[in-house]
Length: 181
Length: 187
Image (cartoon, rainbow over all chains, first blue to last red; front, side, top):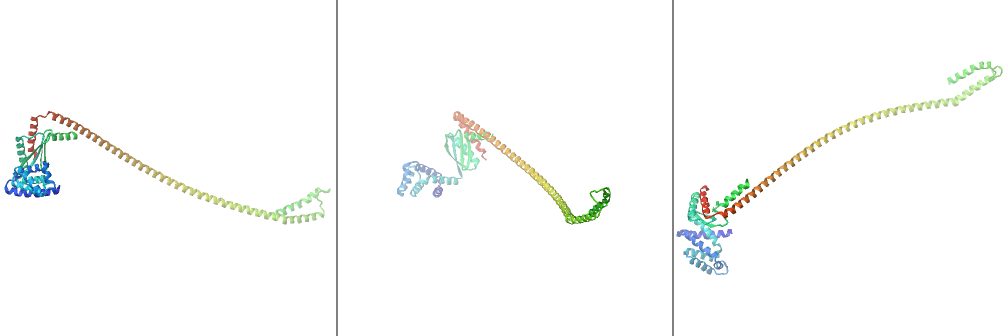
């Protein structure tokens, strides 16, 4: 896994350098994420990209076709083609994560993974982002996920920082206080 | 010997009186035969003195010596016995004193050992009581903790079920707003 990450970082860094030159780093991030999503979720595509006996040229063509179909720009198309050619398609998820880290670092922002009992409204997202940015002094990119196991509220994770605004957390703290007496 | 001669002289001195009393023909006649009788008497006395009296004296003397020797030996033996008795008494006294000393030492050591054992037993008992007390306190603490935990689990479980049933959308929105408001307290 560590070897995967190191390889993914090398590819991500190379792509980020090119993307920064073009000034489309964020757009490329979104396109790359979509391509990686299709390559992973579509069994036919992932089968072609990961089977070793399929020719590198064919793998490259399939990956480029997927990118093209999703409307990705030429840089993304060439990049996923190269990744498939080098038999690194199974690294795509890690490459996307490493690329996001590079883009975030370049833009001075951090990602906040917000897990909520119900979906946040746009207004709530804006309020939460604004308050997090004020509290942390960085730009915040919210990644929301609905978790039906939560009773209410949300849990936000920014790096190693966890903000527990859920009813579950409050009940857990209450349980500890009751147990302590 | 002198006493024998004295007796003989007394007998001879009494003869004339006896002769005078028995002039009419008694047991002893005062005539020439008296001399012969006297000579016979002295001869007999001499022979008896040689043959019987001297050995008798020698025997008596020997007997006296033997008795004296026996007495002396008895005396010596008695002295030895006395000395030995005194020695034995001294030894007995020393042995008694030593026995007394040993007994006193043994009693002292026994008392010391008894005191030490009692102290050790008391210490051990105290330690056991303390350990039991600590263990009991821990058990009570653990039981209380388990009871608190059980009560807390039950209460929270019931609360979760009730909240899940009763939460409406406006409640979710309010909870989210409260949570967003608490973000300012991060720093």
